[in-house]
Length: 242
Image (tube, rainbow, N blue to C red; front, top):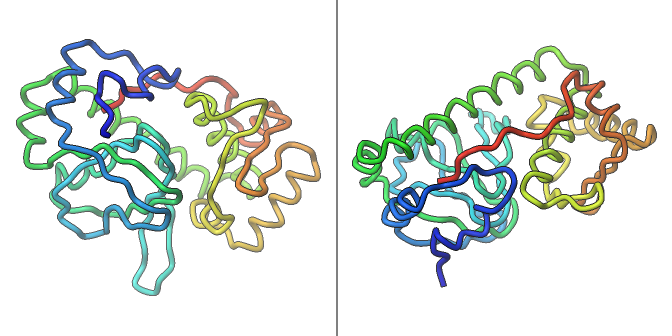
């Protein structure tokens, strides 16, 4: 059974802005179905001309680019509510790949309807523009992390950002949240070696700031993580959901 947009379980989460009944109806007309994928399944491939766009309804994944020699740069992590495939919708080709980290359920949208839906629904068009701007902002932060933060500052930044996102999605309970990624994924996101990532996580654990083990992230000292990352520990801005 597919989930009607009116009954979307994500709409009531603190992270997402409200939607008018008209916008819900327009999004429902744009939605063509749902897709369930297993962990490890490629969803979109770099260079592909994908016919579909997606919103992550359940589960987590990641976006990444690869070099010809096989090295990988993780661009960011995918959480419920993220819109996937906007590049293909606008540029007709993906410049990065998307893969499911856990089993995922995706809301599916037909890319051939994208332009007409965008032009006929200015409120929803602005929401997509907001999401693109937010992604640009995040990539600026990520680039700053890669270029200027120390290893411990980089990992503190990543763990706190992840926890703030999980908290806003209702995934965090009592300072813990599911975090089903591998250390290699975090290393590939931060431009660190796996060995350096492991040693830095151990340092953070020994300082009793956070523990990541058995696919669960536990945060013990948010203030100190924020100080190391040189960011504020404050709620994320509410965002649109497609």
